[in-house]
Image (tube, rainbow, N blue to C red):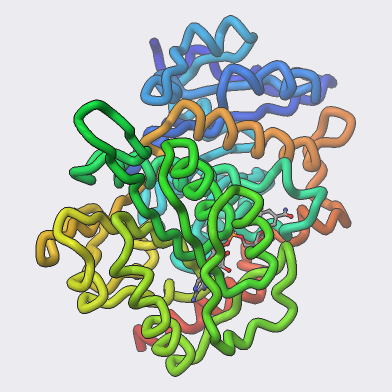
Amino acid sequence: MSENSSAPPPDGGDDPRPLSIGAPAELREGERRVAMTPAVVAGYAKLGATVVIEAGAGEAAGFPDAAYEEKGAVVGSRDDAFGADILTCVRVLGGDAGSPDAGRLRAGQAVVGMAAPLAAPEVSAAVAARGATLFSLELLPRTTRAQSMDVLSSQANIAGYRAVLLAAQALPKVFPLLTTAAGTIPPARVFVVGAGVAGLSAIATSRRLGAVVEAYDVREAAKEEVQSLGARFVELPLDTGQEGSGSGAYASAMSDEALARQRELMLKTVAGSDVVITTAQVQGAKAPVLITAEMVEGMSPGSVVVDLAAEQGGNVEPSLPGRTVDVGGVSVIGPVDVPSSVPQHASLMYAKNIANFVALLVRDGALALETEDELVAGCTVARDGEVVNERVRAALGAEEGVAS
Ligand code: NAD
């Protein structure tokens, strides 16, 4: 395929150039997802857009170029994809502020994806420096209307499922109760810490495999959701200080004393579990340490701990991102890029989330960046050459403070 051979049509006299929506291949190591699947191409065309995808972008997720072409997309070069008016990505700039792709961005262009704006604000700053408008969907308000665009939820769902499979594969036991002529095998005991989207998915998956499941979350609202999946909610006599922690709210950071008490109270449940899966996160902060090395050592040899927060600092003291650590015969797994390990379905959901959001940016076949929409405003991180989101600005300020 020749460079720019299938670029979106250039300006054509009096006719305004049609809106274009593009997706590049994700170059970050370990990333197998793609921001655009063949299934969303027709919807983009309905918005009046031409659709361009970088050759090979969907391959790792199971979507060959021909599948996009069949739906009417143009398969082009990386420059073609980056040339689009709306650039849709999984990881913005591959998570690297110094990426040469920054030079491909331009003023007037909208970039939609996950930029990790609080954990890696320098990526947002790099997009701002190019004058492009950045919408980072991690900051989408968690309202009912936003559910169809909620990339955190769709990807966490996959991660929770996958965490259970990782645990099941590493565990030297089966999950279900087996009553056989060779004897009866009791079901595995799974303890899920953090019952948000990933935790609930892990509970449901463990239950489907036949395990006996217990779960804990600092949010009161999680109790009913845990029970509705057939798991036992572990009651801890603990003042979590979670105000306004109803359904839809985020957990807030707990004091060191409260976390120490939580660890103490969970000790017995952890020791009695074959599998512990941790998913606890506090938005904008490092993940809380909920399981110490000592607690892991209290588990029976052969047990498995999966720390889904390993990439965000870890809920489990001895976990290391991307590694499996042996702690006294207990496997502590710190998986990374978990949704990416189920790339086809993770991409199907992600691309649909992105397409639903992009529809908010298009009016009468043109890019409409000026909008009062609270969802669009909530996740606008960069515009007119500046980082405009206050939390991201604060994160950048904090980084400069550390650097100086
Ligand atoms: P998350 O990934 O930020 O955190 C995962 C879970 O860890 C949360 O349930 C949190 O309460 C829990 N946690 C934090 N500290 C903990 C601790 N010390 N011990 C135990 N658990 C701890 O959360 P999430 O899965 O993205 O969901 C956050 C909230 O948003 C939930 O209330 C969820 O129901 C809600 N939500 C709403 C929408 C929507 O309406 N659009 C969509 C998705 C999620």
